[in-house]
Length: 159
Image (cartoon, rainbow, N blue to C red; front, side, top):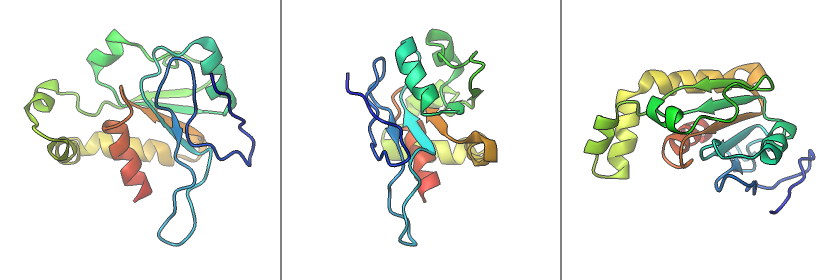
């Protein structure tokens, strides 16, 4: 498995860790004012339920201090987050798309994203407020695949 260095000059987007396939730092993206997003501040990921201890240690050494899990209650029961009971991070479950029946009605990704914005404004707001807390960084946010719920929050942060 590929290793990475978390030095202040490390600028590696993809973090190849056993037990996951989609962990990425969102640093280095250009901003509207010509700067770039800070490396090592926010990491996005898929489910963390299968991370072995070595991969957990890498994230703790990153050093991830806050984990925000955007998955539904049923997803948490089926695959608990390895950091949910950790004394080393602040763990929050802020469920986006809790009502699975609403999700099953959407016909496209566009409809899914509108559903999240139109129906789940409070969880979206709470997620961004949690990330915005001074002591939240470095912060990792994730859902099951790390694409739709996580992607929406990251898109809002980057905008």
